[in-house]
Image (cartoon, rainbow, N blue to C red):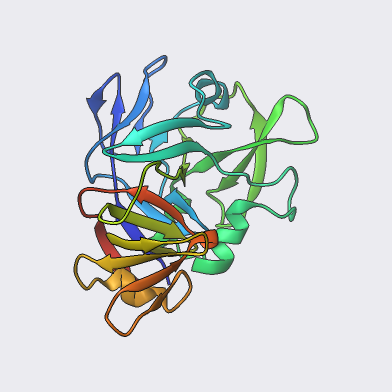
Length: 242
C-alpha cells in the first residue's frame, strides 16, 4: 500500500526535463512547480519513485547541496531536499529499508531496477559512498564519490517544512506517516489541528486514523505532533492509494 502524489517538474539549468534523463555536467538541478514527478509518501517523507537523473556523481550532488539537504519551495510548499540515509553498512537501520518495510519492494512502485541510487553515507572506505537498488530493492553497494556511470542516479527525498502564520481559515496541507490531507483550518491547539477537507478524497479515506481522527461533522482532528502543517492554496495531484 502506498500513497503517491505528483509534485514538481525537474529542471536542468531551468529547462524542464523528464525524470530519468541523463545529467549534463555542471548543470544546475532544480524543481519548478508542476506535476511531473511522482513521490511516495512514507514515514513522513516524500521519496521519488525512481531516479530523477542518471549518470551523476555523488560529488556533483554534494556541490549543489543536494546530499545533506537544502531548503526549496515547490509552488507554495516548503521542503528540504536531500539524499536518503541508506546505512553506513549492509543491514544497518536506515530510511530506505524502513520505507520498503512499509510499502513493499515491488519494482513497479519504486523502479529500483533502473539503476543504483546514491545515499548520504560514507562507507568503511572514507572515499566511498553507499549505493542502493539495481540488483534488488535492498541491494547495498558502494563506489567512490567521484565515480561516474550511467547506472548511478539521483533519487531525492523531500522533507516537509512547516509554514508560519497559519490560522483558522487558512488552506493547509497536513503530511505525516503515509498520509497527506488537505483542507481549511477550523481550529488549532498545541495537540491537534481541526481540518475541514475541501472535498472527499481517497487520501483522507486511506489514512485510517494514522494521522487524523474523523469527527461527526466531517472535519478531521489532525494529531499535531505527528504532522507537518503547510500552507497550500491549491490541490495535490494524486494517484491515491495503491
